[in-house]
Amino acid sequence: MNELEKKSSAKVRTSAVNDKIQDAICRVKEMESRFEKLAQAVSELSAALDKYADAGDSLKVLDAYYGSDEWKSDFAADEKGLFPKDLKRGVLSEDAVWNLLSDYRELNERMQEMVGDNVKD
Image 1 (cartoon, helix red, strand yellow):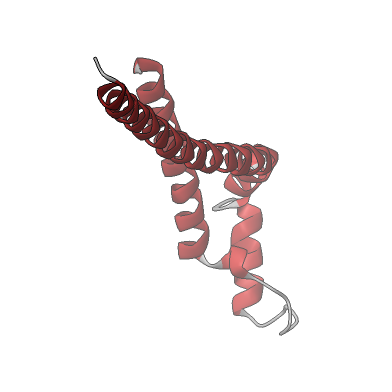
Image 2 (spheres, helix red, strand yellow):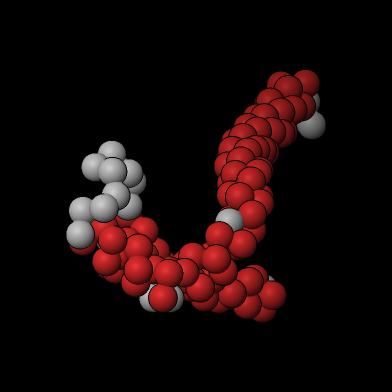
């Protein structure tokens, strides 16, 4: 192989190496982006789950209150206008409480399904 052929062959090899490096750089950038997205999602979900777990006691208390004699008495008092006008009373709305409790239970089912799917992977 003469000198010109050697240089040409070296350029081809260098070009192939550069192409591989460029492919690797693109791959690393994509994987880094996916890594950052996943890390952020994991962090946010962890914080949300902590907050959700802390709210578990509220679920038990609210569930026991909703439809109880106390709730019925409070509802009747509100209907008679005995509570101050500026008192927040969303808890006396039958639909709002029912919907919230249903959403809570559906979210638990969704999380259980997700955990089951992740265990299979």
